[in-house]
Length: 333
Image 1 (tube, rainbow, N blue to C red):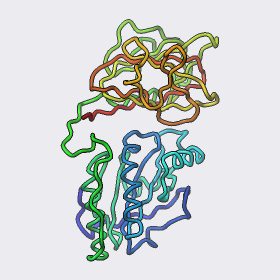
Image 2 (image 1 turned 180 degrees about the vertical axis):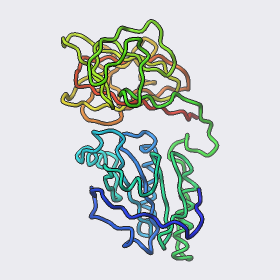
Image 3 (image 1 turned 120 degrees about the vertical axis):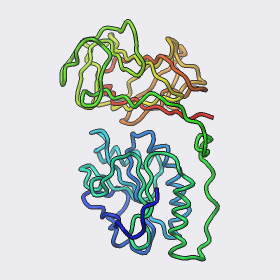
Image 4 (image 1 turned 60 degrees about the vertical axis):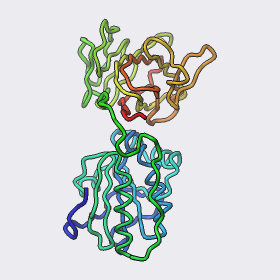
């Protein structure tokens, strides 16, 4: 959305630790166009916008654009500097990133969304904002408009082509399962057994699985943000069941004190085919589909060829497997 000219100054970026840059103030950027992007490295919508931000940085930084990523963590482990540094390296982010663990910058912008982009002109006034994915053409046009206010004769490239076919304007997007959380602060379970906050509960396998509801089997520990198995014998297995509607499924996992364990993934009571396997899925010698969990991040489980409803089952024997949230993708070609 476009904001009325010369009404709101872009706030200063106080309070956070700068990761891949010296500390930068908004005041010193007067005369440049500034794009502030609120993101979290576990957020699927944020991740899907990164290719555009990285390309805009390459295209326009020398022409007067300064992109600053404000990393506002959704989960506790995303407050850890090493985890954010690892993500910046993995995503190959070259523009400056500041950690906003205490949400000081978030509140200064009165922001409520991941991702969220705020674009200010050469005088420091916010002129454009966009929340969520999409509107990449409109955002780049706004960048070019503000750059030309600095130099009307500035030579600018043609607009970016869509990174994905699903980014083409007018593409049809389905209504998908909502983001589903495991922790008791925001999530709920379909099991009849009552959850024990900050305690262990034994759950029975569900007789019926309702849509968009997480079910558990086995012993699980429940915290505010996550749930993890609490099995007594390493030969036992804990399970998750979910009937979802989407074309793609992601899961935020933190290995906690355990590393390099496996989470087996089944769809409609069968192991995944290679055509439906997400980019983080591997296959063992028996053809079983699984995740090899070694670091805290969002894992891509499933990328179906089409949109639809399916029964997902996850199985693991690791008590370090902290599960945080499922996310889904709805747009297909």
